[in-house]
Length: 167
Image (cartoon, rainbow, N blue to C red; front, side, top):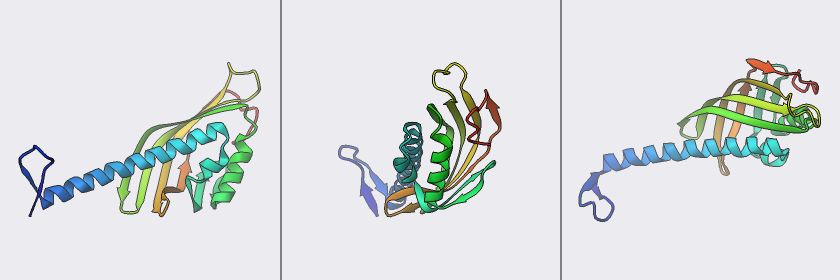
């Protein structure tokens, strides 16, 4: 069986080629959806839009963060992160070098965190920053991809965290 190429191409594509191309396209679309999910959520953190951010998480999600241990459930994750980050006058959450692998309705991902925060109003020349690896797990549901588990490690810090939110 062959499927016609787009108009004007003049050649045919086998069913196997078509299926392979469809799978590749689906994989790329899934990876882009995961990237968009993470960017949407982490930009919401910068705005302190906890509702948008937490909608990126599955209801039974787990956050693993060294100083905090494991936090279970979307609402508990929201409450802990909002309490920790609300005192900062300004923040930027950078997600770097993201890579994803998709298997059906599950996916994994890795990336790096670079968090920068102003710790005191008017003290913008001496921010606190930290960085480390992310390790993610995702699940696809009726609403699309959601974060089901995040492991976050801290490899380095710079500056003084006078807020001490991550201790």
